[in-house]
Length: 100
Image (tube, rainbow, N blue to C red; front, top):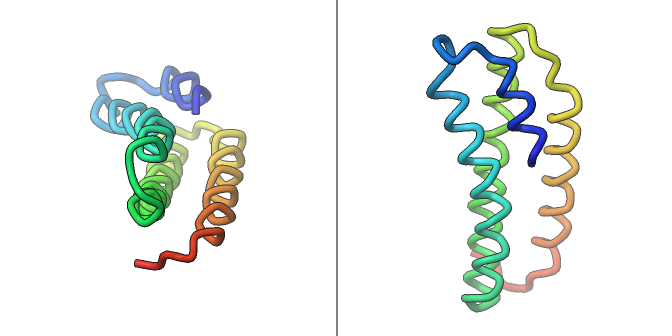
C-alpha cells in the first residue's frame, strides 16, 4: 500500500487534508491488522477480521475514486493494486470454514 503515499503527495493539503490522512491510515491499518490478528486470535476471529478489512478496502477504493474525481489524478495503478489485494483477501476468506 506504499503507493498510497505517493498518490496522496500529489493532492493539495489545503483541499484534501482529511482525506489524505484517512487514506494513509487505512492503507497502513489494513495490512498491519491482518498480520496482527493472525498471530493473536482463533480462526473465527481471523476470519471476522479479514471481513472487516475487506470492508475497509472497499472504503479505500471509494476514497480513491473521490480523489480522482476531485483532483483529476490518475488512480489506475493504485486501484489495480487494491483490487488485486481484495481478490487475494477473498481467496483467503474462502478457505475458512467458519462463517459469521
